[in-house]
Amino acid sequence: MQIMITHGTLARTRVLHFERWQVLGALASLLLLLVALSGTIYHFVFLKAVREGWPIVGQLVRPIVQDELLQRERFMRDNLDAMAQKVGEMQARLIKLEVIGERVSGMAGVDAGGLRPPGRPASGGQGGPYLPLRRPGMDELNAVLSQLELRADAGSDVFTLVESHLLESRLQRLLVPSIAPVDGPVGSGFGVRSDPITGRAALHAGLDFPADPGTTIVAAAGGVVTLSEWHPQYGQVLEIDHGRGLVTRYAHVSKVHVRGGDVVKRGQRVAEVGNTGRSTGPHLHFEVLIDGVPQDPARFLAGAGGPGPGTHKPG
Image (cartoon, rainbow, N blue to C red; front, side):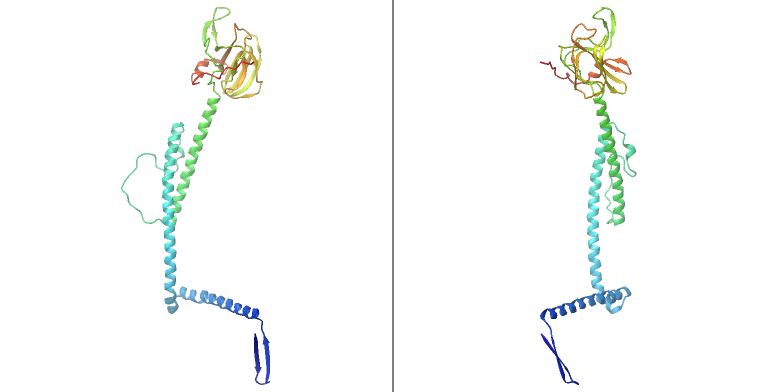
């Protein structure tokens, strides 16, 4: 592209040569300049005119601004309606969870009344006429959400308390003798009896389980082995501490499979039936002691729900 410039006074002609990319670049720069200028005029003239209320410009711009405001208001209203609906659904679900939490805590024997958040009504029948409210605003929704958050935290605390209580109860059951240490009938019960050797009346401080030598003996509950030794009366004897002063004793055994300090589980094999010590035949003498005082083991094994583990005889 060529441009000829002629100077009238000097009668001289000058020719300027431009490439196509130079012309396109100049046009693009001019277009960008016009866009920037238009934006500047809009911000500094039209917006100022709208803010200051210039009559002519205000009349031209007012419909556009009003339409934008209406669209924005409609958008906000639709979003508030959607949020209000979601909040209502969350309230309904939270109420169901609270009712379930109260039922579960009641079944677990946990008093969760102190964890009810402020403003949370007590469970029970509710009703009344339906009186719809006006469309909630953002502040009202935020207040409701804050209340829901408090109630959700309280519900979480209830379930945590119930879980802790159930876990504690389960641990207590595991640490209380609840299964027979030998699978088989009881030969001699707890209490006063005629001594099998002297024939005189004497206290029998446990239960006798007649069984073949080598029959498996299991721990009646979980605990820690505190004693495994020879005793002149009990013969080879084993004791397991279950905590809180509760101890089980396994006497006249022939072989012990655990050592002092071992942690054992309920139902774990700990020994084998024998005929050691002061005994007239192969059997397990089983005792339950609380703070060293013998208790009737049958009281603890009554809830076993069936016989103990299967017998096992070494080959």
